[in-house]
Length: 343
Image 1 (cartoon, helix red, strand yellow):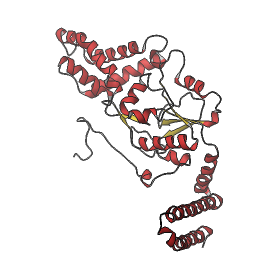
Image 2 (image 1 turned 45 degrees about the vertical axis):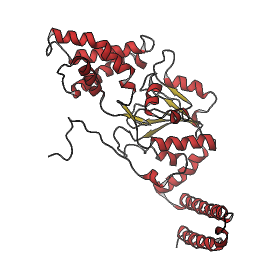
Image 3 (image 1 turned 135 degrees about the horizontal axis):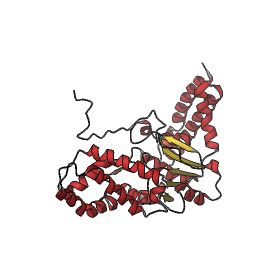
Image 4 (image 1 turned 90 degrees about the horizontal axis):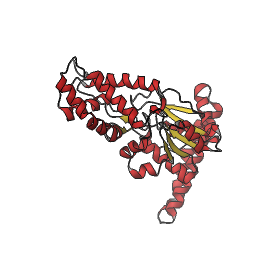
């Protein structure tokens, strides 16, 4: 038998002895917490011995992972920030569906399929993002920047090639109402955004770590969302969950400083190596002056393109529950998708 196997057998016999030894104590109310506490301490001893053995005796990748756990524990972060998009929240359906539905409600026109609006939105947004960083910060107001985006999307789709003058005038007349609906409520509400799987469990563990165990401060630093990110998060999360978890929330449309520049000012004297920023797989690496952890994108539910969100509990040596290793996946289909079961 290896050391580990002998120790495992010894631990089983030892646990049986503990149960017999404390049989009388468990029969009264005072003995129960004493017995449970003693058993738990022995269980922790066994788990610690197992980790030491694996780090000392295993070779290759498995041994490296075992050793890495102790190294990570020695350099726990003092501050953890998240890019919320596709990490903590994700879109319910493509944006183009909401652009089409909003225009349909106010005009009643026959309109192209949602994917036509989605394509136009992606193209217009990409061009605008290149032309003016941080949602037009420093050149125009946030609302003016988005107003220009929405107007150009509709001008791209609703053209004189397919609509007569009266119909085009109807779109122009109702544009203000359509824009206000999109900007003020739809694009920052639960029609567009939902909480990603496993987020509640992760945030609960981080809160407990920070509040009871001296863990890191927790923040939102988004390069993909403007300063309405706080309004969006308030619509997706329960108010207590949001306010009791995040120490700060920073969007990326301030004309005077980028999101990471503002975050750096909040960190003050915290060393760079004690900061961690969590981003989804496939995201453009941010110009952050702190280490980045990549997790599987919540938009795709693919667990092979980065560590799972709850794997961060292992990274920071936090306790896990049995259900934390279950993989939660979902897939939203629109009427324009080809369902995999269809022939």
